[in-house]
Image (cartoon, rainbow over all chains, first blue to last red; front, side, top):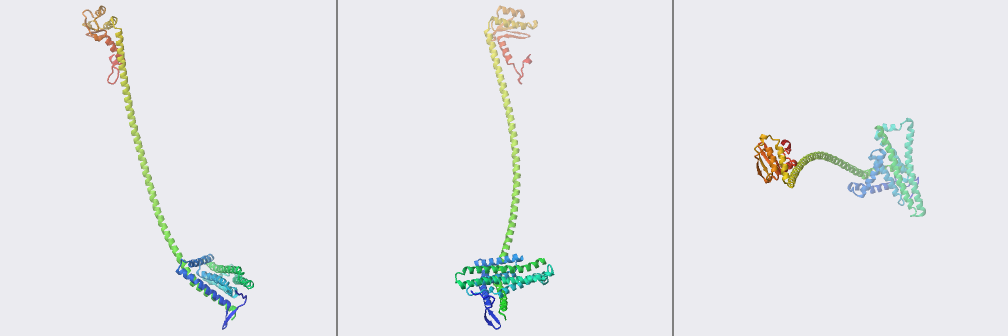
Length: 226
Length: 244
């Protein structure tokens, strides 16, 4: 395990472009997820009666229920977006338990990127649901005077998303790294389990909040359109 | 280029690529499988609904047939009950008629038996009475009885006109003594023809052109028997009144 707070450890410079450690761990996490979950997709397609396929269907049904409760109806795009968010954060937290591996979610730039994607997904989904004018009109209701507050609300919750995930993941990982550095290998195991639990919980919270934000934009648009 | 900014951009692109790949390799097959499963479930539900409708139709038809059968059974039951009730009434009427006829027959038989018994009893009593009178007269048999009977015959002959009394013939159980003959000659005149008929028991029987005066023990016994058992016509009515 390792922890570098507020610093970017550059592994190598590819011309003007730096290749950081967080980028490497992100790629590793993505590759891990591809390698781990691609068989699940194949199993669902080829052996639907197997346990792997059942687990995949169970996971997707959970995700679909979550989105359906949030939006009011199934939404394929939101299902993929929210499911990817959850899997990425949870996978990063799981890989973060490996020695010398710092999950990308302990980096503020990475969590900010995820929050920014959520921030962009909200207007994208809202405009897609009700059109540009209808979506922009939402910021001026119930009174045009509330437009600044709406804007601040959008920015602040995005910031809160990024900082919450970063703070929780970074702190847990830092504590485990400190305990490992101080007392050895076996003592931190409970704390590592707690760190993993916190990581999964943060993945769930981040996914829920992202779904709620995007779903609210879709639902408001549809309710007004109706 | 700033490492943080590069990192930010890379993370965003990395996540989008990851989402695309996961959407293609993981979510799409699962979604297809779930949609197919859902479609299959919907199809099965539709088939089940169709089968349920068919079953309900069959059930309705069966219920209708059952109700029709129930109605028919009820009608048959009522008809059978009515028929049985009629038959029972007819049987009761027939039994009643038979009972009445039997009763009448028994009453008639009883009445006949009563009549026969009464007739037999009367006949017996008559015979007993006649026998009693005959025995009584036999006990009293003698000249005094003959004389008394002659006097009775003379008293009856006295009511007959004198010209119708002669010629007369006298029958007696025993030869008449002088006193009895004298009494008869006073009524009938001289020249009375006598004849002894022992079967008369006692007394005399006088035959005149006007008729016969029977004052014998046999006659008295017959009269006693007749008094107890008077002769009757075919309907059973007494002929005593007619005789009188």
